[in-house]
Image (cartoon, rainbow, N blue to C red; front, side, top):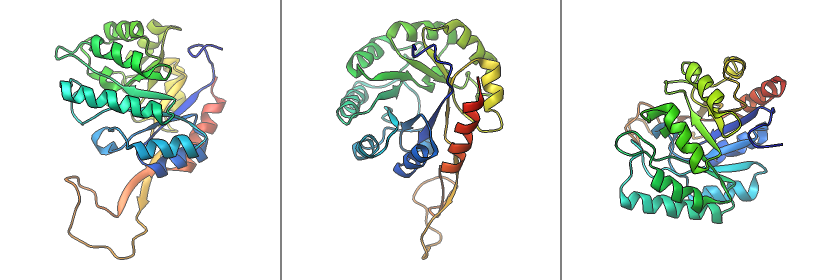
Length: 254
């Protein structure tokens, strides 16, 4: 059956650490998007993380290729890093990459994305939520299809996928069997069925995360490693039980 015509509902877990990747695999997810720095919207993971996932986990591993936080218009030096990271992901056995680039006018950076798709082959290429910052979603959709990407990850140009459900539905209809539209952002067990019903999408991107308490017994107070509001003894990771719950729900959707 074609990649774009499958009726099976696919759960892709955004795994921001090696432990999250393990939890996603144990929970029964179909695929992981391996990354780091989820608090920054996700950045390229280390080569060691990629190698661990592709060597030790029986799950399809897509690697986020994003050299920094912020916008998706990159300098020449940053693009060289992007290309090197794609080569490394392929060499480590990744099944796909997740990336996206825009021109300063909000259009898709077709020149660089064309090079990326060609370089990544035979890995699949997902155009990530840079799509949500594009100027025109329907024009961007046609351009991304012409580039040969396999799917688009989008929240429907809204803070969450449930808020962007109308646009996502329109994208799914326009895309037809030419490319997969994968909703992402704020998806959980309470809204997965509604998103599936209203959009017609069959792949969903989510973190399935929960708060994790540090195993540390000694805890130094008053020192933070970053600028965020959190602390080093309370962080979020993918929860195997949440993944299992979502996968069981997905299996019932047709």
